[in-house]
Length: 506
Image (cartoon, rainbow, N blue to C red; front, side):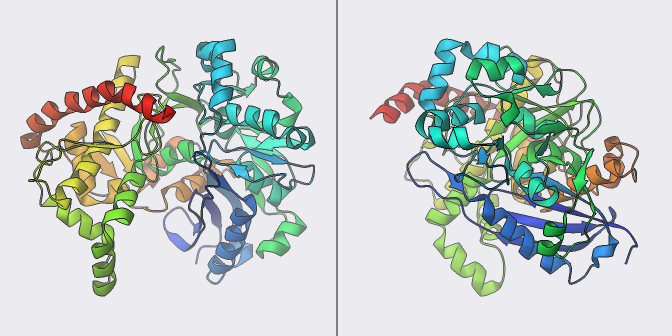
């Protein structure tokens, strides 16, 4: 057992992981799941206290193998673009409004009518949409004014956890970026944006670099968790930024794809080239000198999970009988189907879309179904549809001026040999999965902590630390088929936009 270890938490939408590592291996890990609440159509909320309970339970489990004295620092990766209103004690005044939530359409429309998208986007790097935090904050201000007035701070998931541990109201530049009131060029809260939207700047937490030590574990947190009082807390970053570190894609120009619940293409760069078509999210990187350019598709792994839960009860039963994963059985069915799924196309817009189209009203579609198609064709079409959308994002990135070559890969989707190969073939790029799945974000947070503690020189060392699996190279025999279907995929969305709008109003 090493003398010194780092404890990192990955607080996600569906569960929390705790990992103890010496950066060479995972020494102990634990996971606790929880749910998202959907109280009304378009609404998505979580009680922040479930995150803390999950952290307590996961910590108790990892401490069965590790002594608190061996932990030299603590850091985090957390879900992003949530809104939490808390009082002076850090207690939530209402449930967290999740990044999945899209209730704030009237507020988004007001911002667009009054100020336009460009004035917000060019400062914050965040598009104006009902899915972004600034519109949800205005929703609370208009619909629950007493909550807005009582709020001492407006924070995100990681900020809530760090306050529980340190007693300080702090955030990091990446999480602050996506709260939509941050000047990503100056790396500070924007007085202009706060004044425009009527949100007092003093309601926002103190912003730090991801590698900063932002406090020490308090006595209360020490008692709650069983960890050593005074253990340094390093800011860490949101999952959109930390995944690049966990992928080992931290050098200038490096790119990676993530296929978890959501999916994204992320490019890390020291150049900030704002997209005139506003197709990308720009956030400050975990590296204090770089930015992450992110094109996010909302329902990547979620599309596969949705199909499994609605149509694959047989695979669930069989998987339990033979001791495997239902997803593995689905993968095997997809692999038996030819590339292109016999011209069946899936638009993966179950919850709207962020990139390269910005349309909360978009919806998922199977296009081209015939009596010859089987369930196996539908499974593969879902995989290919997600890959087509990320290919579309790559084309948009290169149009802006960010070339995309070999991609590191993280998340369960990429680590599926079948789906990973589909990504390589559809994108026509080599994909290099990591071997830390499903702990890439937690390990990325540990690397960030190691830089903050002076154990590593900088975040570019991540490339030498992160273990990789065999590269997945594109199969040239599948290129013609995917090249023929890709423009049809794009045209399908373009021709259905009016239908999506009408459905949204029906």
